[in-house]
Image (cartoon, rainbow, N blue to C red; front, side):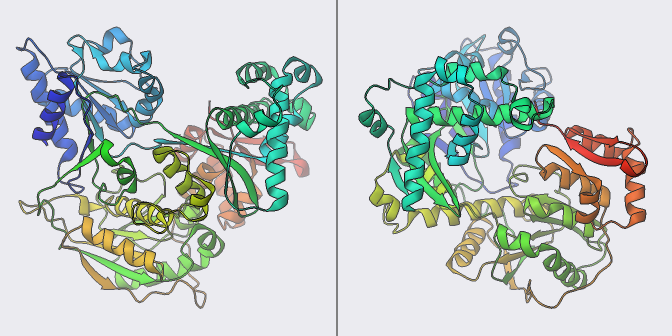
Length: 604
């Protein structure tokens, strides 16, 4: 690691922009700890150096940023590192006084646009310090959200047009015409029910030469004051006004991207849309080194080609021979099937695992977000049972002491995701490619991308439990069990191969479990309060009657009464957890007209 960091520093000091270096030791091998130690040691050298080396560490979560700063400063014995994020922003003058700056993935992605545009001011503010330009950027785990997706549907366009008043139409004729033409073009594709196809807004410009270049920014600004609640629902509701306003603004922003760059038409289920994407990778970041345990499986690095180089990892860094992967093969493990049948499937899962594992086990279940509240509500009969959901487990340490991981339902990505990712990295492709996506020997590169992304997500989820910890000099982990339901197809085999490649020594055993079969009746063992928080986290902004919550969480009349009492206590942990999500308990009316519900507000 130190050799790679020093090579990156040397290149950066000499003005060389080499490929991104990707360090890929497995989870638990000390990548983050090593990075903290390295920058602390570098800060000590800086104290007596005429050419000090400043660094940036990019981590996934805000809470992690603070923890890394504390660790670096403890190593150095003084304050050499500082965190900068939305909860505690710092001025440029303050940031420049510290050897190491710790920021989040999102902050890095937000600054990437200006950086890619010839070192704009946003990233300059982060990369400059008292020693000049920082020379090393350590990105802890692969950057999240590096592909900026755009999707605009016919319904999106129609909703915006619904709120364009006659005065706005007169003031912004070009933009309103452009919206109408986009809607007509999308309707034409929908009428012919065509497959995926490249759509170039230049075709609109050619057909309507009198329409000048489109700039939606003034229209977006003018619509900020629109009273959407009055126009749409004929009522006064600030929350509704803000929610619709954000949706309209996002659509106009998406339409701008469709005109500014390439786009293509696609149909997913019954939804017709124009789509586009771009990369938000800070290519010009000084001395970039990525710490990515799943780099071997992540196809994004393949797409970067000569812009990224995977650094070979010494063998035998970790040994997972104390862990066993129990594999069942079933059909219907995607989100649609799992949401439809989750309650009955979960009952069968719980009954099966309660026979196999000790009651003192600590179990972490990873599933789809829409099902998390059911799992929490119904629970399992173990000393500890915790639930996480896809897109919210990577990089988290909440379940690091659990001895068992259960992967129940897989996070498949659709073809639009694969198209967007490929186009963002490789540029616009042809209609022929959309029909036959061949690339570098892959007859269907989209299928490979989807499968590899599944593997990355699953390996990340498995490594949330104590297998991530090394307990001896051989890199062995504590004894642990992993239960996973894989599909009965080539994807299932490929995922298993990827897991074994990233977790050397892992034992694999057959798990004779069937998700579907006779219903299993079990008493609820979970927490209705945890289930409620999970349920409201997944809800869209708006009001949810307590009658809906009673049904979703399978509460009895007594359980609902106790929940009302809890919600009325503003100091209760559940009420505070809901408040952190922007959820408040409201009661309107009296007597028989009394209604109680939870109102979730749109985040600021």
